Each structure stands twice: as C-alpha cells, then as structure tokens.
Length: 320
Image 1 (cartoon, rainbow, N blue to C red):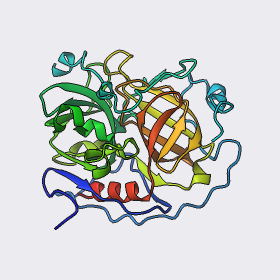
Image 2: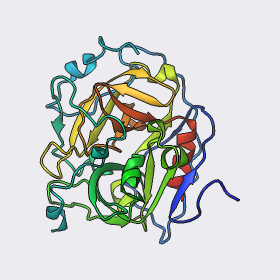
Image 3: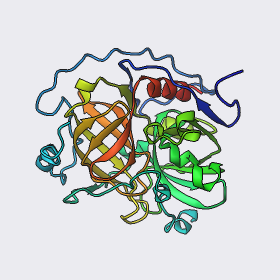
C-alpha cells in the first residue's frame, strides 16, 4: 500500500528538513535524445552563506526597476485564438483559501518586455479548467523538461470539486502571442497536507506535461532548500501573470524576505491575483534557485517555503 495515489493525480507524504539545491538549465543546450531520460543531478550542499546587507541575493537586471526601493521596502516594518476567450478568466486565488495576493505600498512592478529571454520564458501563464468546468488563471514555472511547478490551489480546488480537468501551460505568454506555443497537462501532483487537510503551509503542486518539448526549449529554474539564516533578509525576485494587468503580460518585482517561518516566507513584493504559483527566487553568481512558491497576500505577501520535504517531492516530480 503506497502513501500516494498511482493515478494521474498523486499525493505525497513528506519527510524532514535539510539543505540542498537543484540547478537550473537555461534551455540553450538541446537534448540529443529521442526519448527523455531523467537527469541524475546530485544534491549540492548549501554553503551556509553569512548574512550581509541583503543576504547575498541579487536583483535581475531590469533598467526600469527601482532597486533602491526594493532593498528597503517593508524592512523596517517586519523584523523577521483561444487565449482571447480567456481574457476575463478569474484568478484561482479568488476562492480565498487565505488572503489574496496584494500590492503593498507603492506599486513598483515592472512589465517584462524581453519575454523570450532567460528567466522570463521559463515562467508560464496557466489556464485552468477545474473539475466543475469553470476556468481560472495562475502562474507556473519549469523545474524540469516536462514538469511545471505552481501553487496547490491551482491544481486542486477544494471549492470546485478537487483536481483540475486540464491546465493549458503557456511559457512566455506575451499578450495573445504564444512564442513557444503551449501544452495541455492532465497529470497533476500535490501533497496530502493540501488536498486532504487544506493547510496553507502545504499549498504547492505541479503539472506533468505529456512530453519535454516545451521544457527543452525554454529551460528551467533551479530550486533550493535553504536554512533560516540563509533566507533571513535575503533579496529575492518574483515574476508572474497578475490579474490586475493587461491579459497575458508578465510583471516583475523584488525585495527582501522580511520574516522566515517553518513553512512560509514573508515579503513586501507586489503581486496580485493570478500570480499564485509564481517563483520566488534567489539570483546569485548568475545562478537562479527558487526558494518559495508564491501563494498568498496580505502585506506581507507569502510563499510556501521550499523546505527539505518540498524539495524532495519536487525532485521526484521533476523526474516523473
């Protein structure tokens, strides 16, 4: 008897915390294999980076973004065709499992213009068809050739009948333009802490695509389980598809992690409904490692923290 369902939608039990990282791939190296074989990437132990002025994180290079504001916002407050038819699809977070995503203070989000560049093309607009037939929108991001990470409430909706029927994954969507096309996923993953217990601290899941065509083209993010000290005050980045902006446009923000909890990260990064499932990542030495899955608002806004159990599940799902 397994601890998960061996069908298209699997629920996994969790283990305990340690420090590990899984590296990214920018899509520049195409696979020479006809059939996809999971990569055997070894875990790399985190170096326990000492906290300095901003925890060692860096900002993505966007000329219109106010870096000075991002460094200080909220830090003194907290210690620690078809696409056109979807233009009015509501964000999944409107079902309000917790607080919806929020713009905190001054709105300093920046629109992504070079959408086919790294890392923006690795981030996807999700069009969800729920179990009851209704539609909603979220954000996702590639963690492997055919695996897209997102929030749990994007793949499993308690108020709409459970697992989604299907989710269209559109990497680098730019208005109504799909520069890489799209794929429809019908195989999903989440954990019992979300699907059975509805714990907001366990609100994460993923989409398994039918093949690796999209992931091999656009690349994927690395991800990491970092210590409390490595995360505290860390400067992080976030980008996704918010519902208060023109349909199909991707928007970026950045700032410090102001509070670290056992299962959550808090920050004042500006987000909005539709951005659930977007990546919150550390950029350092030209490497990107996602440390949280954005899911809730409330100023501070919040990500589900990638602790060791989450990390382990993500590795399984990447190689599914």
